[in-house]
Image (tube, rainbow, N blue to C red; front, top):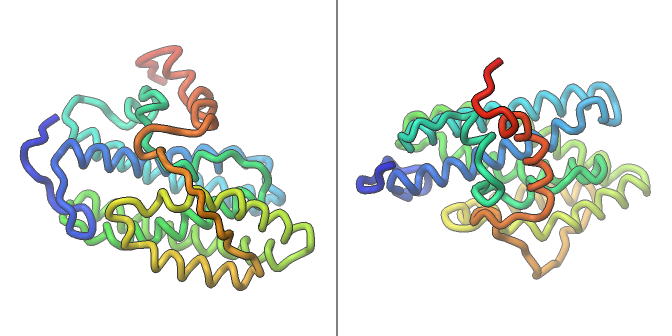
Length: 252
């Protein structure tokens, strides 16, 4: 890996060297890989068939973004690692995903709120990066932005449906929001802080429609971007990576 010369600006005018860019790409690839795994757990378990198919397709969208980002990171890194190596052989402490996306599926409302909070962030992220001077990243981001807008329509629609639904669906949605809110500040560290105002506007608007109250919670958890995770990620990776780790270099 070379780290001496700067690469084109990624977002918001920030210039990174090769090593920094690889780490940045891995972090966002990890976000999408981990969330794809979480959403994939709903296949055959969603509350209705249409939603079963929708969540499966959204999981595939996130997986596709992760694959593209891993491939780009591997090319810049120059160590011969491909998307499978980066996804399936890195240990937990080398994963750099947000803590939000690794939170387990407690119930459907919990998964809907987790996706909504993340989707609102990714729309801003990909809109920014679609103008990157890195042509490959700009291409990945442009496609991802189209998908993220659909994801946000889907998740926000469910937030309103649950929050403004029955007494029980409202209770579950509010409980999910209360539990997940502590993981939201991590999304806006470093250059992503510029997204916070637009994210707030989107989230507040949807929560008002859903009759949900944003928590007033001063406690926020972080560490995912530094490889410090909750206990849930290790269990997820153990299931996701066991075949490749058991049979290194396995080919179908």
